[in-house]
Image (cartoon, rainbow, N blue to C red; front, side, top):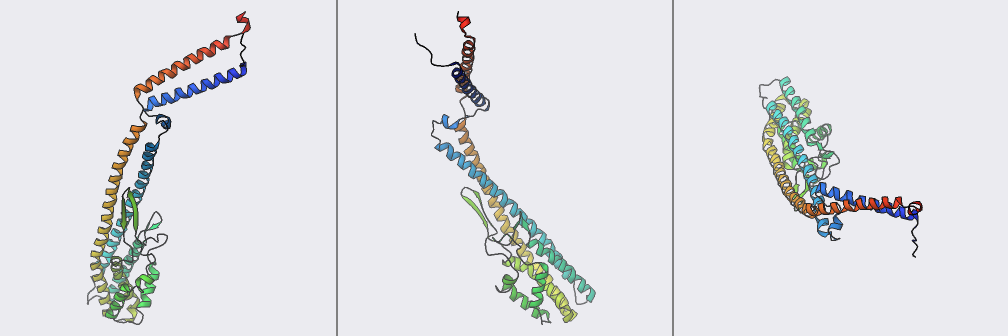
Amino acid sequence: MSISQTGDLSQQLFLRSQTAQIKTNLQRMTATMSSGLVQDVPSSLKGDTREWAGVVHSLKQSDIYAQGANFAANKLSAMQEQIEQADIHRQNIAEGLLTITPASTSSNIKFAGQTALIDFKDIISRVNANYSGDALFAGTEVSGAAIVNFSEFQNQIDILTAGHTTSDEIITTIDAWFDDPTGFQANIYLGDAGAALNARVASNKTVGLELNAAGQEFRNILKSGAIVSAAMSRGSEMRSTETAQLLRHGGVSAIAAGADIALLQAQVGVAEIQVEAGVAQNQANTIGLNIAQNAIVSADPYETATQLQAVQLQLEMHFAVTARLARLSLANYL
């Protein structure tokens, strides 16, 4: 007669292990049935997970592109907002200074110049604006301001025009200074020559924007304010007619800068369209990847139902056997 080598304690541990395993299988099959998705993808693919891993990786990349596109779109929108606000102040400068005539009184001339300086200060703050901590118009040097502050700008203009007492001299000096790399770019611009934006918005699409405050458009916009600053700084050393003529030239310069504003808005607008195209491309690609992923991880409902019934039956039989073993005793046997 054979003697069982399995003790009561080891048998109980074995039964508990079997119970836990069957319950785990039941929970997995129940989750698969309710969600329609395979819970153990590697097992369902018999270990060949290359295609599935590739799809998952591509979906993660698409999510990164979507985040990059969102940041780019918001930054470009911020640029448009600051350019638009700068344009409002440019128009104020033009309208205020062009009211000056040879018949204007000294107090009217002074008031127009001081008002224009307030708008010029606001333009500088717009050029120095940032989005999410990144300077908008400083190229890739996003950690600081694009140009010096209002006070320093005035100080540079004051030094530049020292000794000049006629409007023609000052205009010629300022024009040359703005075009000289050792002038405006060396003393006012604080950024670098890098692109204001370089964002990957889709798997094969990168949007770049070569725009910064050292560009000709920004220099033209700021020039009218520099002329006003010079007029107010040198006013005590010039005849009132020269000051009036200089301020009117600043107004004319502000009018002309309207074309530069339009160019800036157009450049940013083109970048916005490119970002939108990248977003659409990335969304279409993501939809295709999700379809491919669903095809891989979707469970066959009929096969899942059959497996679920089999596991339920196995659990019932296991509990029945366990209960029967629990009732076994020498007394009952005798």
